[in-house]
Length: 129
Image 1: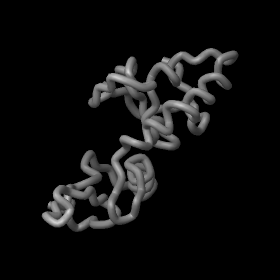
Image 2: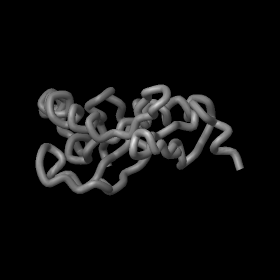
Image 3: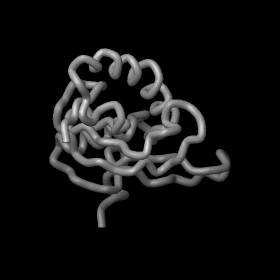
């Protein structure tokens, strides 16, 4: 598979996974898979980063920054303490040689009527076993 990240121009990726959430409207309506970039750690819709032809790169980048990325930011997991998005947390953990599938826990607050996500960077002791 040829990969090109429209977010950072990297040509290497970590993995490809199915999109867990199904969207009925918007740019993600027909997206089934995302590929995680190994440089910026952003999950990119496979239709924007897989087997991209050189002559379409500028069009794909425009689509990513104008339509897909703003939608991605609306739904992306974010720490309630440090306000980092999941890809920023994953990148920081990777750079510090920390590997973990679990990067968040949910902190329930009865006053807020729900939970808040707290990341492994803000509360590393909560993840030790």
